[in-house]
Image (tube, rainbow, N blue to C red; front, side):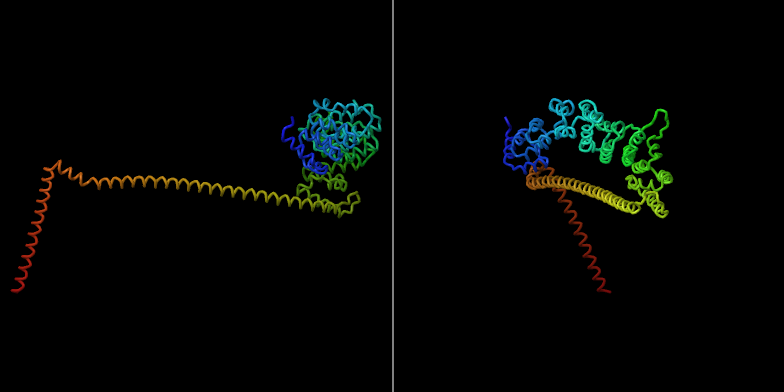
Length: 459
């Protein structure tokens, strides 16, 4: 039973036009197996083509490989999801592939060969002309290899240390073609085009022997020298115990100008002394290769040396094959502008990060201040509540004392009337003595004044 969400999706795609289905699938919309099967049964060829190209459900693709429209069949065989479970799942899901590869060359044959998810070990067999491909005629073998080399995306992605064993087998098969393939013009054209766009990575290869095999095609051996130097193909004979790279020595000393120019184009320049030694040896030929060397355009000191060498060569009027003075100046200008742009972008990034850190620091300080304020507010509120509660206690106590004081005094006097009487008497006599003393003092003062008046009258 199909789940309810899938029923809604199937209904939605059923109502779409062929163009809308193609647009949705091109945009990366994920579809369920039920939707994929429904679309594969629609009569419009455009819908079936879209499903054949973008669906990742093997049962759907299996049916489309039997479609009456050849375009749909070829697209289904070229769908990389057809083989996305690896070698263990390849044969059960693609039972027809061996029969197709054993038959004469057809559209399905080339679609399988160019599928980027196809078993890479079979590609090695193709380039080494063995297994299923052993029975191919020379012409068919050349056509199939050419089609695979120029159309299979496997070779266009950069090889890394993490590539699987089978992927390296396919690349190793191409190296085998260079070392053992037919030395013919057609093969040189195909391999030259392949090397200019592909990435083979580092292999243990005797480049000198390969160049010697193909030396009748100077334009091709120049490409071999350039790519071999750039990728780091290396070779050391057992008799040579030092660490020198025999490939580099062989390329730098090769008698063919195209080889040395390709070497200068691909060499990873380390320092100015290295450039000086190459320039002293080959002059304008060295400059012709270095002017295309991308490793010079990432360091200002190397560009300054190259600028001075080009100016010196231009003043010498030497006729040694280097005429790209204006080209060098233009690419140098573009490189410097790009470097300045990257430096500005880097500075802006650093400045933005600094500002972000300052903002974060300010936010942190504000948060700390707010936290402190909240703590102080809490303390003040606690103090206020404590003070208020204590004031209430004091007021209640005073009120209670005011209400109960007369009764307490009366009760005290009743219970202690003798002590109370004695206290009252003592208080009376004390007050009386004070009053008498004050009266005597007043009489003395009056008598003194009268005497003073009488004496004054007689005098």
